[in-house]
Image (cartoon, rainbow, N blue to C red; front, top):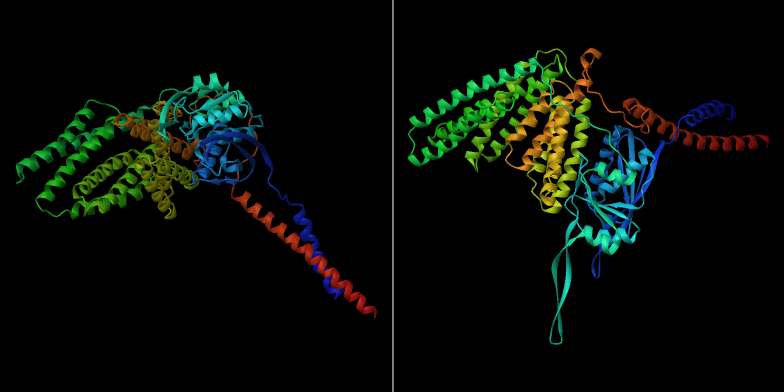
Length: 632
């Protein structure tokens, strides 16, 4: 028995030695803590308090963990993830190369995520850079995925808590240095006392300086906060003007001219059809009003020469088709052909946009524009089907706009010369991950605040579309749809913040980011296109949404092109970047599938080693007992 056990013992010892040679722990990158002001409810009403937020950063794969000694609202996880992503982007680090472990301890029974967002970002910055947090500064504010600071509640109570904790500077979101609080008024009627509350407007800057010895400062971005906590000075960002080559300008003119001819022809045809149709005077007047929008869009487009004319022509085309469809519906003519034509073209064009090859960075931008239009047309087609029984007019309008989008998409695809098939799988996976966290965070914040969820609902629809496209193997379309979801979710948050604070910093920041994306490389047509689209917006929220499209789809184009198969294809003129300070972990490569496989092997060998040691001890005991028995 002892002889038979010897080979097994040798194998056990070998496995144990191999496992011992494998690293068993993720390397710790940094650790930091910060005090964040909060509000808790007491018997006497709301009162300010402070919570301790700590973060441990290790090597990892982009996971964010939160542990609290208080209950947390559902937006807390999203706030922590946004804070980590924003700081990684600011430091030019790969978010997917780290894990973040947050712990929150405080007296409040329930901790909400948004108001601690900027504080968490400050802690992450400290952990990643090793710079100590300035303890004389405290901050409250929601962190947006683009690094802007959003409004929160209880600023008056938080200022008192910050002063009590020893802070000398208190950073607040834009527009919140003047707050409304409530005071209790006692009114006596005979032997009875009646208690009521009345609003009181307080200039927090003056009040805190006079009563608390606290300086209150409004901040708009995470960079503003880091300046007070660390003396951070962001590098100068030289943003130039977008540069379009003669080839790009020629393509734009080709698309514009084709759409102009089509818009003029269909407007004239729709007008003639309306005049010749047997309809009553009231309906004719109503449809003439709808057709006037087609004329207005056409007139504006005729006064423009560049890419800004193209969306106007597409909308003119859509309104002319809508009027024709409404006439046929009024006359009782079958409408099946309209829906079936859009469905057939949609299926064909989506496949073409996914499969189209690119010979240049400009071609890739054509492909992105076509994919965006196909995805928008698909959403409108589905909405048309859902609205058909309850609101036929709106259903037909969606169908007409979808049809016009497909016309424009076909024209963009014709401009591509072909050559290289971009691999969008990694970009799609990355944007899907960002879209999931950004959309869920935005939805949580807006739904709790009772704010308008139109944009965030659109973001959700594009996120679901991206998930479906990715599952079916259409990774390029999935990447575009996911980037749209991120853009709309961010826009939803910023529109809410802009409305709540009355500050224009959110629109300015969005425009700055769009301009940066449009000027990062020559022929960044997707960014230029959507930045111009924002000029058509009738509201600030719509303008922010299109500017966010410019930033995210412009950056997606750059990311896909830099992942080209050959160095020659990936070559892209870049503006000179300002020198960045050395950052932690910059020498490490990003995690890959091989890294994760090796990590799984390490974990398996570690478990096997523990089992091997236990087996070794058991076999040794058996051998000892057998040897002892043989001597009897």
